[in-house]
Amino acid sequence: MRLTRKTVEVASMTSSMSGRRIIAVGPALAALVQGPLAGAFVEAAGLERLAGVRAGDCDLVVVDADAWDAPALAVAIQAVALGVAAPPVLLVGERLPAPVVRNLMRLEASDVLEAPFTPEQFTAAAAGLLARAAPTAPAPAAPVQTSRCWAVTGAVGGSGATTVAVEIATALAARAEQERAVCLIDLNLADGSAAAYLGAEPSMRLGAFAGAADRIDAAVLQAFVTPVSKQLDLLAGERDPDAFQTVSRDAVLRLLEVACETYPFVILDMPRHRRDWTLDALSGCDEVLVVSELTVPALIAARSLTDEIEAGASVKPRIVLNRLASRMFGPAPSMAEAERALQRKADAGISSDWEAAAASANLGGPIAQHRPKSKIVKDIGALVDRLATGPARKEAAAKRAA
Image (tube, helix red, strand yellow):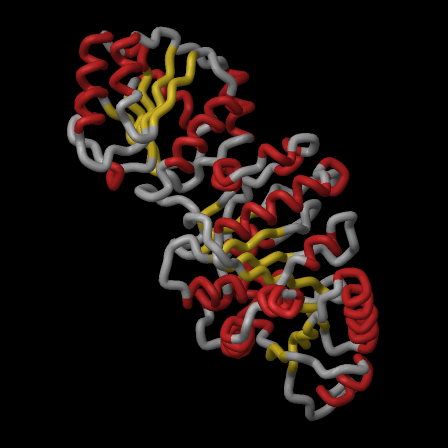
């Protein structure tokens, strides 16, 4: 198997195997650890490791066909195929003997990749196998019939919308009984910070599908995902000042469509400034939360933004007042004064707890993890309980239309 230095360097930028458990059978596969398998937990093994291997042992087995004699390799692959709950197997190499490939095809999930190959080809083959093996390997939940999608956006910069989105997703994940129940999607494509707040590595690369949005499916979604916990996945890209120009509207909307087919709950951290896909994305949401501080400019901006969303997306946003504090002295507006400025009722309030928010941001992880007794966690929990127990707005609207 030939793997050039350039291949490894490029692959290191395109890795999507973070957190995966991989068994690499063949010494030459060690080069992939710095490339397409970067971030995965890789066990280097010999051919004897295939004896009795099961799906619970790993997420994927990669075998270098060039490292072994064909008869011995054929027997080892046959043993895997005859076993119970076999993991997906990817066979790579320049020499792919027919007896070996025939035994490989007996597996429920298998593929062959002829060397030399590009990092993108390896990643696509591996992601496809992981998606096909979803019932027996850690992967996003199987497509569900109904999904709830909530969007969070800030009225002004620095209002705390990303913190609110992260904590909502965390609270929903804590209530979930199934794995891969919640997906948090950071749509601040140029400078999103959800990954940094969670201490996670972003791996979403929507720009590669600018002209091929229809290629985004469950396998691609899985390649983009960064697992945060058993119940929570993150979709976030690296900071890129040109992202809003290189990522197409169709790619964003197709990503959201596939995510809503896959997860029971999808939380969107929306950019504050409108993009060509903003109103389409908000129109498909059950809830839209506009987060505002208790300052007059922020409240005026929140009122304007909610009016704009109602007119363009035909959905009634909820206003969430962030960083509420007991006022004894000073000019900060009260809740009643804030509602007069908004010319509408606020739907929820979140207490101010600067120390908890700052500590969690610095440590990497949600406030619920580092400061579970924070007032922020309590207030977010009450908001989530209120929204989650009510009927989904999309379902209600569909019933009214029928």
